[in-house]
Length: 90
Image (tube, rainbow, N blue to C red; front, side, top):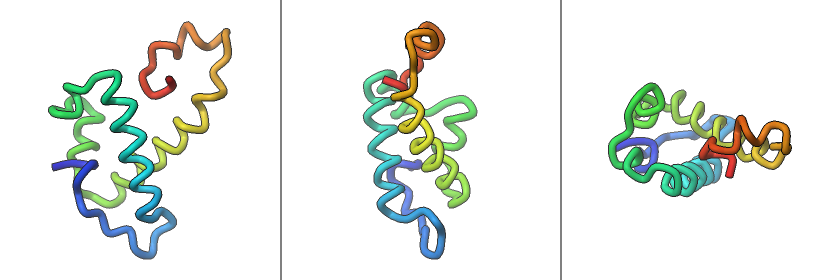
């Protein structure tokens, strides 16, 4: 189990089920396109976050998805060589 399928209780928090659904979809689409094997077997620091059942970690991942969504359109020609291969910005 992991971020995609844990039943996080977000009642009373600033983030809600819609935010969770957005982040799950965002990461599944971006990571699924870039590295589908990672989704099946998450590794590294991000893998630890992905496998966590802690609500604060889920909130961090939601926040990260929202941040990346807002940053991605701001990639310029100058920054593209640096960020162009970054999977969550395409």
